Length: 353
Length: 228
Image (cartoon, rainbow over the protein chains, first blue to last red):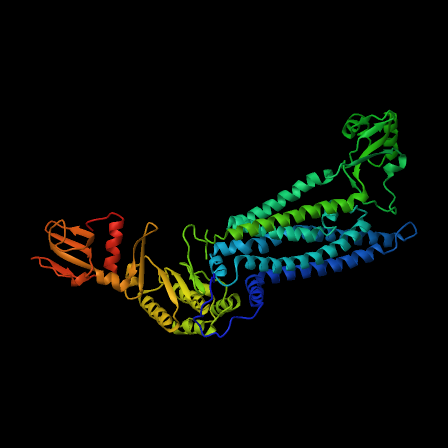
């Protein structure tokens, strides 16, 4: 609605609404339009948080059971079983949290503008006293605040669960889901993909194509980062000397460093002159036929070939925070660009498809 | 209001637009639609909106997607009127209504205009809807104005003459449109005196025209159509 000059209102209402009326109106409208999605996401988050808390308590109590050489075997077996079960469930939970931002983008972000375009209600919404910019700003602030609140709660619980899985399963916090669910990434992911959904809906003006774009882009982003993550900073290398006890498995009680090993267990071997020998070459030509469990024989075989160590490529534990910072930065960039695109599209102001 | 690509406009007061497809939030109840109007406008007359719905018997507790097309149009009109416009822009407002409802809505709208001093700008392709409704007519063809004036004046200025086949009518004035058969010609003429124009030609008769006749004559001429 445009009012360029004051004129007598053609109604019986004595005075215009008080200051702040339109913001309160936006609050009502946002709740009325999105309440099904808001209730669903709030309920899903509450259930997920409760489930994570219960499982974390179980994992924590299993970790606290007697362990080490002095414990009875039944207790050690029970501990191992309970840890495995609870850690498996924790893995599912963390994966769910990592995927949830795609749901936020699809079911909360996309409909914000695409549904209005599709049902042609934008002309109705934007021809009232609320300007399109105020309409978008208010809705983004309210829905964004809601997403930030839920995502922050989930991100905090993820930190707790990931730490427990790290202790229980002796996995590095730099690896896989533990990395993706840590460092408050679920918070920035939720904001980024929520606004990405809004921008996709504004650009495409159709629900289903925008859903497909959000889910496709999220899948592509996940795959792409899996490929690129290890190379975001140049990896370090180190040479570990071969020793018979290395083949006997790691010390079960030693702390696990939060490093990211890059060779997938197939680090190249090094000879005394410092030359590298690819893992597959050594295994296929010399020592690959030795059966598992014969660590001593394997070690002897490597020695006979003149190999004295392995060269390991890795990202050190000290970089874990930096890597989280980089990915949070990427997420916030997506958030800012999506916000700018949605804002620009709304400012263009065309309401018809 | 969209910025004009050329020229300028000035508006005094509140402007409300009701789009042709009369969009409503499908999952909202009718009462929610009124709440929507109340929450998103600085000026809102709930009684006026309620009164409009009551007059047309639209139930407040029904979801908008469960209403008939005519009832949905009434809800959209109620929201538009509740916002207390000084200028109400209606794009094909009667398109979803049956003929009885069209008459009723037109009558009620004219009542609102008389009561509140609101201006209604109504666009329509249904020429018959115009009779007795507007004070002023702006006729557009291909996006350009081809007739613009007070409706009473326009009616007073136009006449139709019928007589033996001829190239011109036997009176002064601007021939707006002409149709011919083998033996007869009919001219729609715009002259200062309209139907009161004196005519002293054997075989020729003068007839008053309706607004629909005027509009059709100008439109046919504008698109180059003759003989229909």
